[in-house]
Length: 453
Ligand code: BES
Ligand code: MN
Ligand code: MN
Image 1 (cartoon, rainbow, N blue to C red):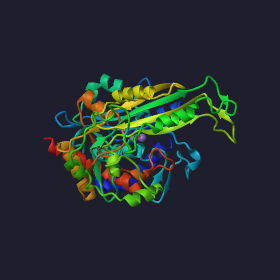
Image 2: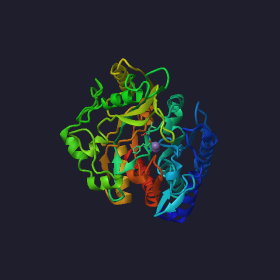
Image 3: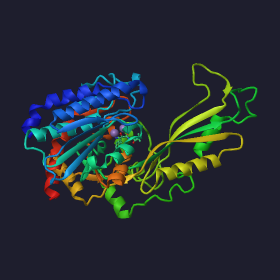
Image 4: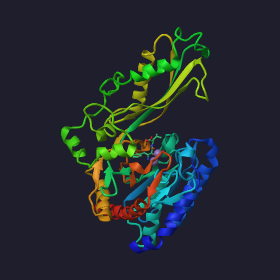
């Protein structure tokens, strides 16, 4: 195995770079053909890795790539999930090198999707190739790589429901999350859910001269800002009635356990260029970004934003707002609570419209399962250190859906770093992480086959 990985190192990287050159931006229809091209590329590589079959499955949106190799029906089956779509690369001018011309600098691969998630799911294809080419697969493997994760996996629920038998497996293995650092490997045991809404506030029936009407007519931008400001109280708590009703509070013991993860607040602030952190009173930064729900404005617009100055009192103002959710909050319920509250607090001078976008359920995975044990030991074997269980802050909505539709739990064996700049300009993925991941994954299969007996 070690020999095989060493011998084919350069080719593994070259293949990933080729995949990174395909701008598979799922959010933007201008890239529709590129998204399909990426799917075709993944299918080819699954076949080349030695799977018995691999195909594109059409959905109402971008295609799903699915392949499998059944070595022995009596052996356990691992379903690998990942996504070949990427976030839009804008703003382009902030990239040191173009987002779809992958470049290696300081032992890192710079490109959109380098870590999220092309670099991470590609490790699985190479690990499978290496196992097939050397000792053989210890487990059956099914691989499902989708193309709509970054836009909410809207059509994946239908796909999963329609292909229950095909997707039948004992565990789902996903590399699409982060570790604490390369010195401190960790395994995420939870993901946050998501409720995402767009709001529009309308005042007068047209844009007005801000001198002629200003002072006498409510300005929708000012009103929107006031409304948004009122959504949190002085303790950083979200002021939507019922918002916390279903939040599961962790026991002091669980909080103490999570607090064992090393965290350097000064380093965190330095990395982000901030003088101070912010958040809910009574919780640490780690807790604020994992076990507690949030409300954040993701975008806000209205009025004049062109060159120079235009004196205008706008007719409309809008914002996109996301709420990260924790167990047992339900995205549909939270969206409903938000809409009701936001409408209720609107002053009589404006009307508001709330449009829901995608959402997702939060997820926690047990740490006392053979699946978790197999992953934990894999890290120990490849990294020489036991991974620390952590709760993640991001969302992968399909994970809760897998559990609901298929009754299968997921193992979040990510190898990225929070500093890889996912969704940001200059996203990157360490060569160390890419190769270490390929080395770690086969241990999981071996451990799992042994433990599952
Ligand atoms: N891979 C991320 C999620 C992630 C990142 C989890 C880091 C844990 C650590 C995923 O691709 C992502 O960006 N998800 C979206 C979900 C959304 C588009 C529905 C997110 O979290 O914003
Ligand atoms: Mn991802
Ligand atoms: Mn992402």
